[in-house]
Length: 189
Image 1 (cartoon, rainbow, N blue to C red):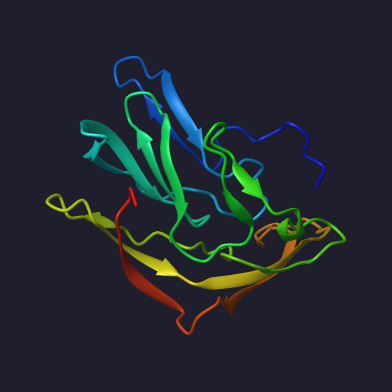
Image 2 (image 1 turned 45 degrees about the vertical axis):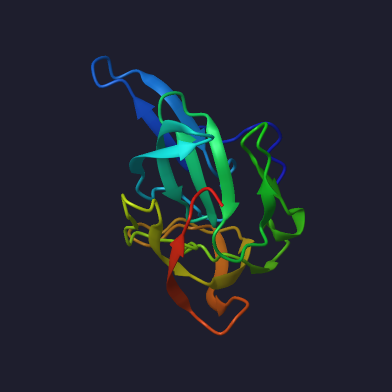
């Protein structure tokens, strides 16, 4: 649980590559340290949005960690990061650093069971793709409202078996009376 300055760079990240050289142009890491299994492999929607009167080329991402990201696709600059589902593992995103503002009580670790962490490891959004209406810029996105308990545990490696080194309970309903829903989202509001 004491990870210091390490971030497991490029995990839970979107990476832009130059198609001619294969070199990294920019990256944005949505969940540094990645203690909750919010692996951030969700699709990026490529579009142009009117931001402050300017047509801005962006990528949009509804991340498993519960934040919806608007990123300038030319340079990787974070333009917006707001939660789209109930979350409590973080209180927001620091727009200067781009890093989530973590809630330390929600970080699982060995000997400490984090309880009612939202969203669960399945994510506030999982593999089901989202879509954008090109005329209104409204996003349509399937979501989950689930929480979990999680603790890191010592685990012996067994060939062919899952090796998670964590004990968790997924599927605890989050606040409200729904298990999941499709939401309409304006990425700039």
